[in-house]
Length: 100
Image (cartoon, rainbow, N blue to C red; front, side, top):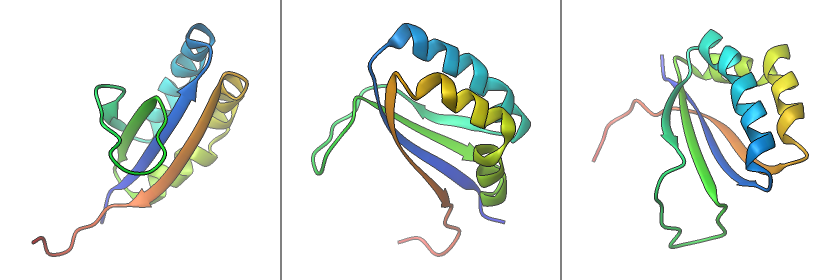
């Protein structure tokens, strides 16, 4: 079964208040088996529009990734970041086919 991923690009306007969101998202991320593959860090944006923060989370399955976002726990966490950040979030199924 392919893994699921969240690909997030964000701008954060109040890092101190954003920490509350980060603390609140820990429980649903753990519950649904999320692992951070990218969490901030250096980046280049050679094409297209960018944001100041990038995150990639891996879940055991696409279904787990969707369920985490829909969970009541994560929906409560979202409320803590909405006034202090702008998010682009894509939930996507991993690829398990042939490689070049």
